[in-house]
Image 1 (cartoon, one colour):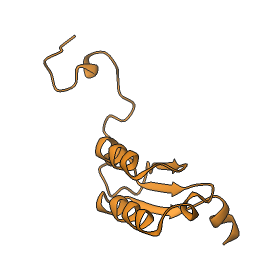
Image 2: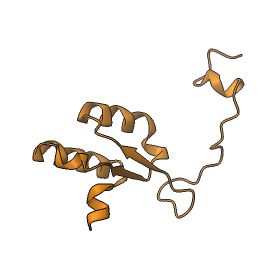
Image 3: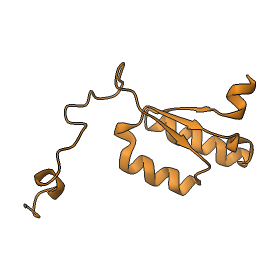
Image 4: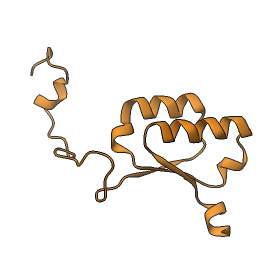
Length: 95
């Protein structure tokens, strides 16, 4: 095990996403469900994993519970990482 390398796990675990196509992707798209994450949690997630996320679905009508400014900031944040964000669940079904 090489603890001095940038990612010691590479010596131990074979990652399932080796050779992943960079964004923008036309295949191998990844969507995550946001069940009401706060803005700070969303920022943390995107700082860590934005390269693997193509879409964020705001599920279960949670976007109706956000303050308008928080929702706008969350949308802008996702877009700044090249991630599409959209309402899902109740709002998508109603549409």
